[in-house]
Length: 389
Image (cartoon, rainbow, N blue to C red):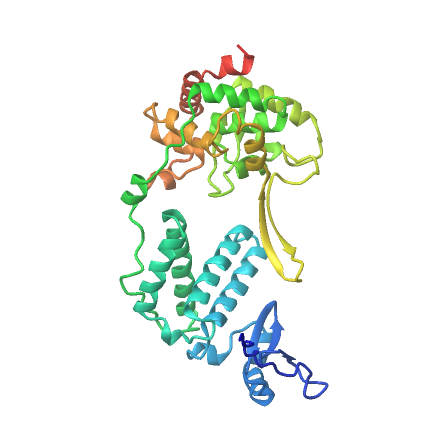
């Protein structure tokens, strides 16, 4: 005979008195959203204990400071995560941090908090915990995602220590970075052959914006975000160059344009003359965008939509199966590498020059850059590909 499972105990969700500042929850805790961060207090329906805990920290939190009890180590792992995300959210609002990066922090910290326990105190962050978390993370993520998550968690806890929200944390030796050699051994080649380049360019031609973005990817190693945020003012068709700092690194780059790339951009620049961006979707949105949205449950989610990748997969995927838009940047870099001018290659791709060169070298002369882009154009047979021969 089947037996009913014991029901989880629930508590009243009415306030003990009208001016009670906290919201009762069915799980016996009490909550309060302060400066965009949800804090919980008490347990077991003890409203007086929850009120005392709230009042002990309320003044500091409402003023944007962190409570004294958190600095002495009484915070939970979830509170440390919430406080850090709140501070980095302020950086997003001031333009010092990308919303996509903030979301990466959020996802990484959610993983760790779920594993360690939301109510665990910082004193339980011991080497064995990090070793066990590393083992679980290694089964769930690939090498690149593992290393990225690890770096975000280290940055979070170092920040917490520096802000004196928690005592020093001993990570131990088990939460190690995946070596670069192992990543290289598992790396998949992302190189387009000249025949594949011809096929995907022919497929993209009926879509003028996608066609121009594909040429920018091959011509200057542009990624999807590079194309999406390309400002009209950066394109100088008369001089045949694009002068545009790469959004990811904010490193200035000058890209000599192939005649085919300039010809593809010309009609796009004639459209929407008052628009600061070269590329727009048919709905007037940026091709790659990260934004906050409300879910059906009323929560806030951060969503990234890469319409460049979606359109490339839809239009060019059948012509070059298994590829993605970022293969264009890999292809540019691979053929550019045949020209023995490493600094010119880095400049074209928006990457820092090595060592002190990045400090003292002001620019890479146009002739060197043209030497690289011309070589890539010749090796890929761009002239024939774009002329339909």
